[in-house]
Length: 198
Image (cartoon, rainbow, N blue to C red; front, side):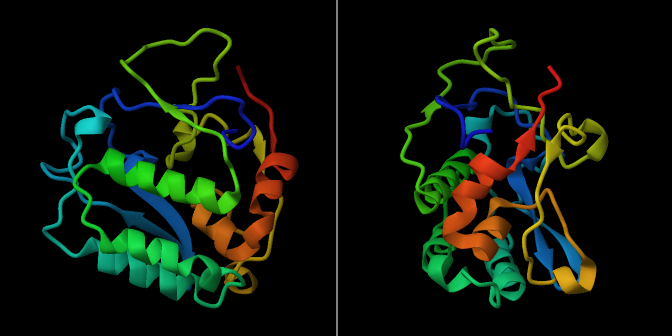
């Protein structure tokens, strides 16, 4: 949706909610679905706004994430084209989860060729008027809470381990970038079909 939207506003004042994609993503590993999770200070149950949630570096999760990405996508068609950008990201010790997510978002926007400026919320707002689509909670790792699960059609593309485990949808944008490369934006804007249930 964001790739096709005229304006995008990123929430930074809502409370962090555990069990969401705010600090995790799914990739396609050699054994199937692999979840990468960023550990947080005070644990995942902390009661903080998104902009105040702090990342924990008690364990070397960056090394684990990067090794997992390399193992999963080293043989994908476009990994070597984007490897340096993401490697550099994982070299940084970014204190805030929100700041880390924004760096990832901006890097992905650049690699996709999306030149639109996205804004940040200035305060928390419970509801938005009909001019906006509130996407804060519509995509969720838990299938029962994934509002768009039955409303989105993702055309298949070749995945590294597709011949072993079949097609996997609902993965990180990195799966698309590493497998589809420069055609990723066309995939997002022209091929994905979404019927909003509201």
